[in-house]
Image (cartoon, rainbow, N blue to C red):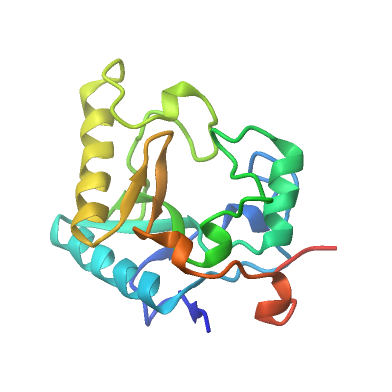
Length: 184
């Protein structure tokens, strides 16, 4: 069973980009902006939100559970395994244990990370030393918050975090959530 991630239960901002055309596919993939995570991931996200509050920030979630069918749509838009998990292997988003997010200030304005979400270029990799200090610091803050809350980072995307040992969770389809996520 997946847990809905939404205020007031979770003190995070939700901006599910795959429910809009503002993503790498250029079209809405989700019919509704439904943010879901496996219970263990939801608990870790709650811890991360609390840690972010402690430094005067908020979390803004861009994606969480992504049905297998949606993973295929992203793969069709960008079949590059460095950035999009091959759906034949399975994405940790499709297991409900991965989240794409950023840090925002207390008012909800995202901190400058040097690239936008879904910028599938080397500039989006963690540990870039060619970015201005403020952007490196913002990425380091996000990494610290998420790591302290129990998440592992993905080196190619500053916004992507997943639970360690994610493969122990099963892959889930849109049918698993009652068919409410995918657009036609």
